[in-house]
Image (cartoon, rainbow, N blue to C red):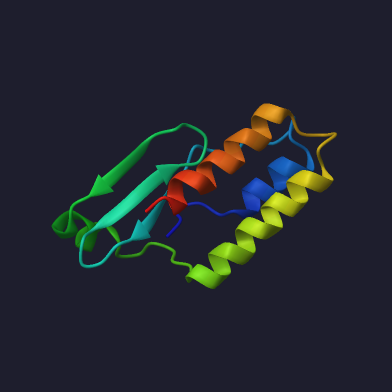
Length: 104
């Protein structure tokens, strides 16, 4: 599901000012209806048609819903523990990303 590692997110949260996290795209597989994708930093989202998604998803990383939920909870917990090191805006970006990806 993800083309970049969420480990970078954890690093960002542990020292928000010193690690640059890319604006990666995460996609939720909606087979047979294609996919829905959201970017991590920017509010960009997109739907991908089934024929295009079938070609794109080859070689992508995939998480099951339980692992995704555990990852989300871990990142949110880390963010709440590290509030003093992360800005309000950075925490909002993370919350918004998960919200946009889960809306589908």
